[in-house]
Length: 539
Image 1 (cartoon, rainbow, N blue to C red):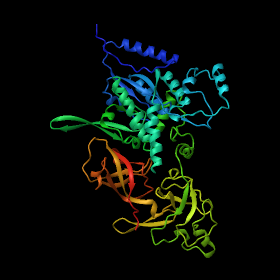
Image 2 (cartoon, rainbow, N blue to C red):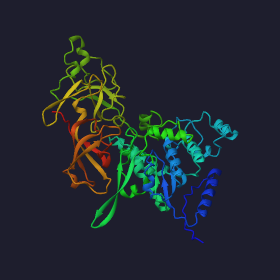
Image 3 (cartoon, rainbow, N blue to C red):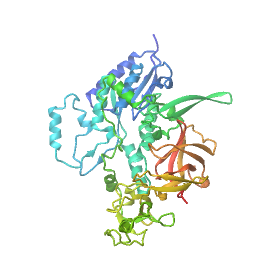
């Protein structure tokens, strides 16, 4: 009789009958496994990844035991179905994150309570009674879009359709500490963070990989749109495997920007099944498989901040101090905005910003024509503004204005007017940047040709030979631009290595706190946090 090997299974403590039944099914399957040498894998169905190469990453034709963290979206749903059809043994995981408690938000049943009611019985008397009892009350939890009640129910329906059990893991405390608290601290310090990148590093993928390895699984698979490729490297007659990260086939949905913090050890245990698919292909597969999430829309918002209440969230958690808004003096001899340079006399007053005014009062148009750097308004707190921002700069009547600088020492917000045309030196003469009539601020103060990156992670695990030329992205969906990367001269005195990045062309609105990611064609070389931007690239 074949010897039965130990099979490890993730068990989420839950009172739900559905989960208890699933646990029984999973246990029975493990008992029937006998001498089967299937490897253990966790697939974290998070925002997307590639299935066509997942078999290769998971060991060729060898079937794996996979735990899929279901997000309740179409991407994780399709990934689960494809892996199931490949013959892997699957179990679903739904991750619970922190939810904001807003005094003005209506109380709702928790996902835990709602889960007690059958998904196919929305008019259940007990459920209706519970909801009616809470009607009109305030002080409820704001649903986190990544782990909302709707997401949980969708994940459950997909797991039932595909034929796999679903369990839950509570990551709310670590999410609050590592993602939300950091988000607020960064804004308080005048930086603009990207919480999704930190979440992938420390929670959604990072922590899940750790849990998976402790439980004896080989992989964590997610629904991210990106690709991992395993390559051979020969060192002193020994073969070493290097895991490389690449952009997804669908460049519009590519999420490699959010994954540059991954290490070799983490990549070794990750599967991204959707990396070789385009979004429309995933949608078609979802319809073909008749999955409940086939037509579900996706959200691009920060998951723990509902709707468009970003500033409301910051106002509730940060101590904000109002202060003056000033027009930043021009870099070229202090001339007025180009669009007013030849304005007739009757339009001159429109061109002039307002002078210094008593606190709490906005001036009339044309006041203080002699003062280009006068106070023209009042901001509500510097953390509410970021470089290049237009919306929310409420000066009224004479705009638009764009945020150019936040001076935390004097609590002053500096803004600029948009212009039609500016020039910069590229080392080989003068070159124009033209806005083509668009009302986008092209003021030199918004442009920089260099920055300093800190907390840099190199995907290969080692620093590449410096200096080197590559392409860089300074924010999500930013157009890649050529740059030169070299060691920062003062890096020896710092806790972390710092790098100086020089761009071929000046870049608009380089923002401290955001991430810069380096690419060699489609390969992700690494990335880091923008700690400072260089001076204006314009003379």
